[in-house]
Image (cartoon, rainbow, N blue to C red; front, side, top):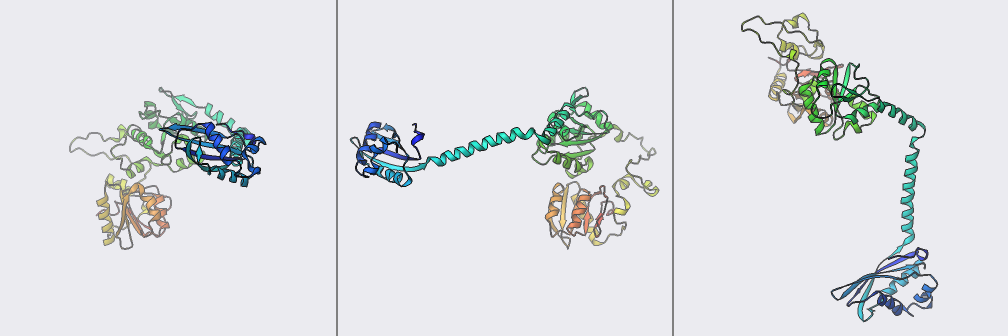
Length: 434
């Protein structure tokens, strides 16, 4: 039904029900006939229509099973009071043609409000278009040109022609990402030493690069990232691991998020122990012991580059040297009091479970959580005064323990510690050995 907008300020919408079959002319005739003389000369429908103060009456009626139903629309340019009176008069109609009928007014709509809403929506759309088109001005124009240059620098590397940044060939450290879009996003952030694996099947080029470069795996924070990371750990020598926030992909991160993720990267061996991935990690051939004849002399193992043991430590078994943290960072006494014996027993119980126990002032167990949730749990565990866990003691855990006024931290090994907080006793498996 078409309504003449030139005569419309308000729109009366009514519903018709008739006990019989009626048609549009019957309805229009009933509206004019049964309201004639009812409202006085000033509101006579015929005069109002001739003067253009009400528009054409529109009727849509359907008949089914001997009954008729439909809608009536009457546009009005009268004021609010006159329009309301006219609408109420419609409900006095009780016959349409030869049939009994009832008319119920649903609403009287102010069409100007609808028009204003349409104007607002259209204006908002136009303004958004203007703002979008103006983004290329000023500093945004510089950023756009800079990004286009960075994107053009992407190269193909290795026999598999993997997407990579221009510095991969010469850089001592490279970043492994999932796909081409991840490399492009890192290029936009100024990082030019990234290379993509292009799927879960890690190419030979990546495996060879991992043997001679420091390799950081930067993976998505979803299940796909987990799968790629497990594949990388099995076939390549991964040094560090960085993860995008949970549920996000590397290609959609901002420059600030990318830099934060890379700053928070953790050593691969620490990640493996925290998440229970031991037995799934790649080892170079040189790391496997050569067969030794029975009863023959045992060659002394080469010390790891990062450790410089004292002569006394060099004469001790290899396991003792590897497990012991730097001397200034742990208590040196070997005399175990009942409290330390309890810690030792707990550590033995937790062995291989990647689990942490949070203890109160009386060394009672407050709660038990996976090691991967330890940092978040410590931040809110106000009653915790000690923690025993099957994992590596890190600087972050010690800092949180200091903030929570804890007195003891017990773990399997000591990680890289730059500053040990005062007032916290730190114990490792080797310290508690009988």
